[in-house]
Length: 424
Ligand SMILES: [Mn+2]
Image (cartoon, rainbow, N blue to C red; front, side):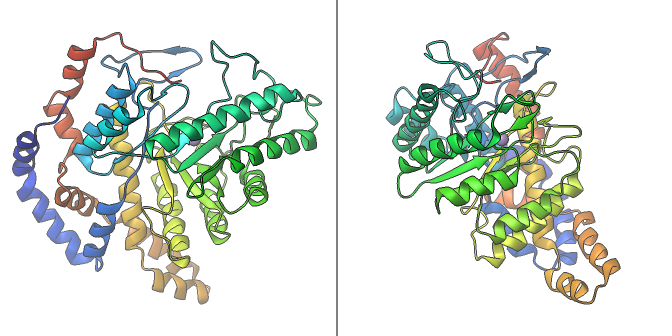
């Protein structure tokens, strides 16, 4: 389904007066509003090809209807999101769920929708129907050399698909680990994994980056072979300058100080990718900013501070992606909410008075430091986010327009109510 330009413009027209009133107030209290709007307009967050259908849990899955049946329809869905918010201009593919059989055609379709190809994602956490050897006891860590080779070859194949599409990075998330004490020799598992990653790294084109994603637990519940940022950092450091750690917000043990992790990885020049979601208990994959918006702001505060310290481009020097699952919400509405929350936290970080914060830290003025952060967090910056969208040709209220235009109803009519998108 394509959004009609005049429909978007008509919707914006009805909201414009109220928007301008709010914007004028925000501009009057936030000194660097113009700079924030410009940066917000540049900022793009990739949408993964597996987030467009209804996700499930191990207990069940309740399809919502109108889910994309092919890679083409997934690209159309992300194109629609991007038309609404102008901040979802990239797609991240998962192989083998979304193999581009005809790469030039897929590339052209993405370009028509204003999308580029973000990181490619490999999959050695499942067995595929035509697969020779099983990953039941791990992939790159496996004690069996042939299984390790199969996993390496798969990753190299994923790079090849990515080259055809113009992607420039590979994300490797391994579910490798163990469920019981004694199952694994930790050192051997690490060494096998490192050797495998080195072979994959050697197949990377010069301009590519490799992201090593860590996760504390699940599906393995005793040990994980890339279990935390320290292990990921070890792999990335040993691999070389094209390898980076990827932080997924849901992949930590409870109460981990993610903002501190982010700060130190940036300091070392080893933070390359970022997966957004939110959680209360574990890797819940809920809508970004739905549970802990203050934490999201604190993380962005470190991201902006750390990227500025290294002269990095906020938009292009990090792989930003949403990695969430949708059990009870319309996936497209959920994604619109996540992107909005990300932009808002980014805006709050940009509005933080960094000079005053530095001075407060230097003076050990703990009270002022807290006030400075919360001043930025508690100022309503939504008008700046909306203004950035408006200037980029997007909707003032993407979610409202999505509903007014009856997007989901149209998709169900076109695709049926029982379609199931590939993914988890
Ligand atoms: Mn992830």
